[in-house]
Length: 80
Image 1 (spheres, rainbow, N blue to C red):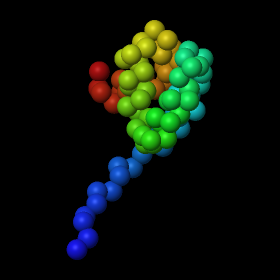
Image 2 (image 1 turned 90 degrees about the horizontal axis):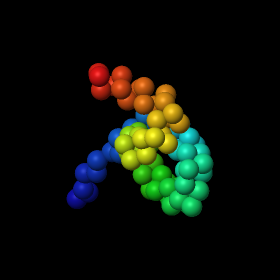
Image 3 (image 1 turned 45 degrees about the horizontal axis):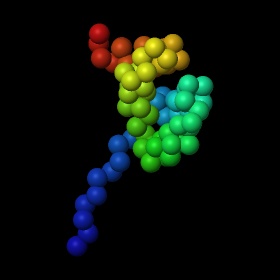
């Protein structure tokens, strides 16, 4: 008997497109972490939205201008 497997949630193309921007952010602010974040993004493909949310929380000062468009989308989604 085959086990039922859950289909991976579809990644939102808007957020998947932020991958290069995430890498640029790290290259500019934390170049020593680029290799690690590249591996993380490879392992967690489709979760770029959560990555950006985390960056905005963890690195607010550095990230707020860099991810201004994404922050606006998150704000609109939350209805705030």
